[in-house]
Image 1: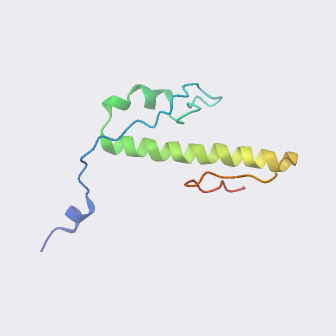
Image 2 (image 1 turned 180 degrees about the vertical axis):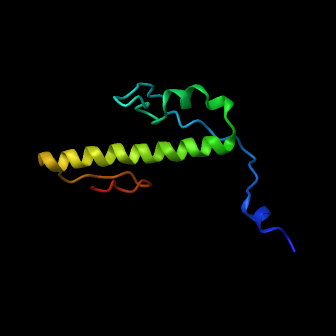
Length: 96
C-alpha cells in the first residue's frame, strides 16, 4: 500500500508569484493597499519558502475581503448603495 500522506502533497513546478499589483502604498493599518501584505511580508517575500508564501497569500485574501466588507457596510449605513457590478471571478463581499 502507499502512504496516504504522499497523495496529499502536490509537486510545485512553478514559483509562486508575488501578489503585488504595483499599487505600493501603505494603508492605515500598515498593509499595502494593492496586495494587502504587511511590510515584513513584502520585505521577505523572496526569502520565505513556498508554504509560507501560500499562507501570506491566503492572509492577503482575507484582509482584502475584510476591507471590502467594511467599505460595503459603510456604504449601506450612509445609504450610498445602488446598483453595483462585481468582477466576474470575485464573489461579492458579504455584509456583516
